[in-house]
Amino acid sequence: MSLSFKGQTVVVTGAGGGLGRVYSLLFASRGANVVVNDFNAEAAQKVVDEIKKAGGSAIANASSVTDGAAVIQSALSAFGGVSILINNAGILRDRGLKNMTDAEFDQVISVHIKGAFSCTKAAWPHFRNQKFGRIINTTSAAGIYGNFGQANYSAAKMALIGFTKSLAREGAKYNISAVAIAPVAASAMTATIMSPEMLANLKPEFVAPFVAAVCHPDGPNPSGRVFEIGAGFVGELRWERSKGTIWKTDDTFTPSAVKLKWSEVTDFSDPRYPESISDVDSTLERASTMPPNPQSAPPVRFDGKTVIITGAGAGLGRAYALMYARLGANVVVNDVSEKGAHAVCSEIKSAGGKAVPAVCSAEDGEAIVKIALDTFGGVHVLVANAGVLRDRSFTAMSEQEWDLVVAVHLRSTYKCAKAVWPIFQKQNYGRIVTTCSQVGIYGNFGQTNYSSAKAGIMGFTKTLGFEGRKYNILSNVIAPSAGTAMTMTIWPQEMVDAYKPDYIAPIVGYLTSEANTETTGQLFEISGGWAAQTRWQRAGGYGFPTNRVLTPEDVISKWDVFTNFDDGHATNPITSAEGMQQIMGNFENKASVVETVKDAVRDAGKALKAKL
Image (cartoon, rainbow, N blue to C red; front, side):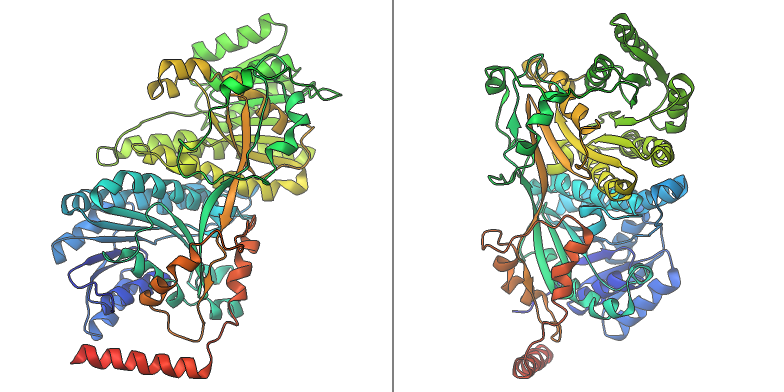
């Protein structure tokens, strides 16, 4: 049976060309009313004319996606409702981090993240009231794996995965689905970075049928899940986590102890497949009863190194600062709280260490770095730890609450990394640890802003891993669980007391030390003396023939194949290039002449039946 969208209203952003145009044409051909949004009014109208000429129903909208209210209102005014939102609009501003301007970072974050937030926020109450809504968020291989010269784009695209996973949790009760897709398709945007030969094989028509399939009321409902699609290939992604290892949580839990067992952290011989923040074993009791941790020789120390820690006036940041100072580092204690920053500096100095406060927003990365240079003459390590919570259901979340969380977490991480980067490059040495969260990895109810910002940091850091390696700049991202002033607002007191920040610090210490010579661009979950690595796993997927028209019905027919992780064909791509291999491998997947003729006859029969 052919899937019909009669009576559905679909809003497609960035629909003046490329993928957005093809989405619009497909939905309209299946009976939907379509709002063709694009900042280029002429391009949008051209698509509308194309739809109407074919007998379809559509209007153009030229509002910015950051004005989601205007975009959605056009659907309500023209068609009386909205049921499907395709967040497809995007821009590229590719540049290495060293040369990236704040405007280039901010523009990409605004269009991709704020645009998706704004449009979804405007559609959400209508989806809730009608107990139906379908949202497609557009991520990218650059967001999933990181990519050289795309720190801004990687951050934005990974943020949309965190956003999707949290939306899925909030929307389930109201039959609102959110799905993230990483499409590879020819468009004005990809034309700037792909060869003509590649573009010829990457038709948007191989992506749109999947989107239609998961947006239909009777189609599959993979809410909160992530798929890579292109050139007839479809494959699902999920998180894979190592078993990890545990250390005794006493004074012997040091970076030197971490060094000796690091290979256990990154060992995937006995993996887990977590789906939520609750999918973790409690290790604290076991950690406390273990024998003392052996130490590496020579010990891991930071003599002569200067370490910047943001958000260091309390909690995790304070624990980091005290540890680094004990191990010989000069410490720059950044915090917006003057009292907190000075108190930590006093603690360090009274124990014989060296520290200086940097009382300012973590977004003022240049000022923080200047204090490090003026006081200690250099900087070698950045721990980007600053954060805030503004938890609220998506329905009740304000634009200000969204903007603040994204700025403090994601933009401040970018600003501090950008400020240290030329110094690290020049001295051919640097270590960076950024701070994600399990909420950023798995999503959580009431934290769409936080999960988006934290996931964005993950994508950003993966790209730093690629850009920094040749300069001996190693960058990693952690998802720590610890009792702090921030988690105190959502954790029971006994949990806050038990999961001390001191049990996170040794992992951070090892990752930012000279002892770490290889690990970069990776994600680690840490809690109560336990640490494990988390990475993507992709199902073996399915390749549809590239010389046949792909339909939503075709996609549904192979659903169990490209979502199967247990058939022995699952892989673990770690770069965009590796991610593209299977997609490019499908270029030569051609159906036989007989099969193609059969399909043509079948399609002709369907068309005739529809007319009758």
